[in-house]
Length: 172
Image 1: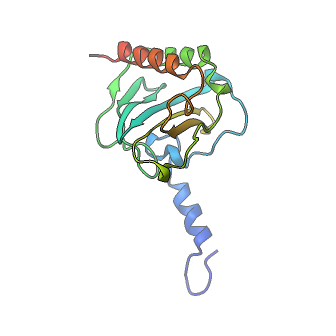
Image 2: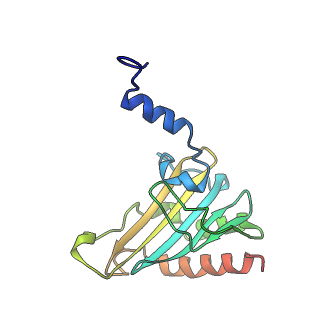
Image 3: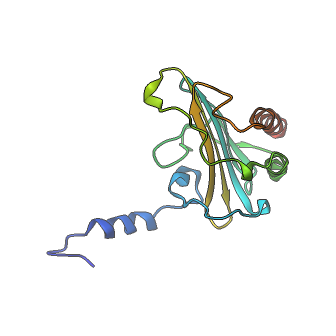
């Protein structure tokens, strides 16, 4: 549906661009649609968990199906910058879903941000994204200067257990 003399409309260009994007690729996870309903955790295919403290990222982008993890991944405008480092093999990645269930992360709020980031210089943030077999993503996160206010009640215990579980599964 080009208009005029072979020009492509903005809408057509967007559709064409979207058709070339693989939302199942970590590189484009930000473009995946957000889930509109609670899904079964047995359908989890990817977990992205990252914390940022004064611009230092730590965390993981885990591909459950491929048993691969990106350690301390960088995030770009479209998704995880997967070309920076090769993924590491992770044993029994699907066992990490048990930690999501144990801490009831699906019951967490979407956003725990309590301050405008332009109001402070030193602060932190965190994000937990869960991608399902249908391609949709469930997102949780927060940012601010008060760790207690920007996280759910059981976040600290979840973080410790999740990180320990990932580390023990990374093939050395």
